[in-house]
Amino acid sequence: MVRIGILISGRGSNLLAIGQAIRDRRLSGAEISVVLSNREDATGVMAARELGIQVEVVPSKGRERVEHDAQLIALLRRHSVDLVCLAGYMRLLSPSFTQAFPERILNIHPSLLPAFPGLEAQQQALQYGAKITGCTVHFVDEHLDHGVIVAQRTVSVEDDETVSTLSARILEQEHIAYPEAIQHVIGGQYEIHGRTYRRRSTEVT
Ligand code: GRF
Image (tube, rainbow, N blue to C red):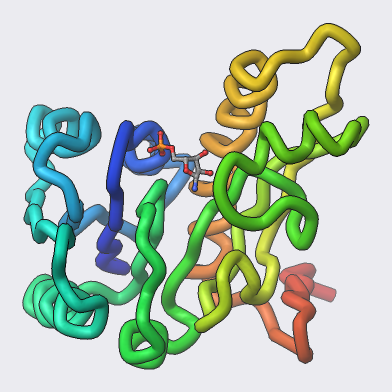
């Protein structure tokens, strides 16, 4: 069993989608071992607890990043976490964190990276006049929204689109993309060449 640790700061819908995929066996060979939140008031904290998932709250307000991250690393190790999934974790990670889990941290971002990194990606896409946007699951490196791309799903931008309608449709795709990408990564059938994540053919000849 691959032990997943999920980091959140807010609503937690991606965390719940991963949990649902595990229950539906769309995501197999993995379990959520722990959820870490840097905010006690995150909606996802309560939702995860209701599902019986172990949650640890590690408040980050006013704390040095490296020191806070060291506490997260220690907790993830204590829970023997193999794969870290960021799901709406609204805090930059220090290089000490990314180095502690090399090629073992995933993030989901609500745009087709490298377009519209950072905050309010859906609003950025609308304001820019993009006709197609979507979501990206990527490995996390020391730069913001930058690591190797594992998977992307597209969403077309309609003429009467608002930030909230667009965000909702992207979120639907996120909930499909994230469990699928996790399944692929934990299956190990890939190679990374430079920035390219290449799926290995599993065909038997
Ligand atoms: C999602 O849009 C995700 O792409 C972004 O933050 C949001 C988190 O939503 N990184 P939720 O907390 O998973 O509902």
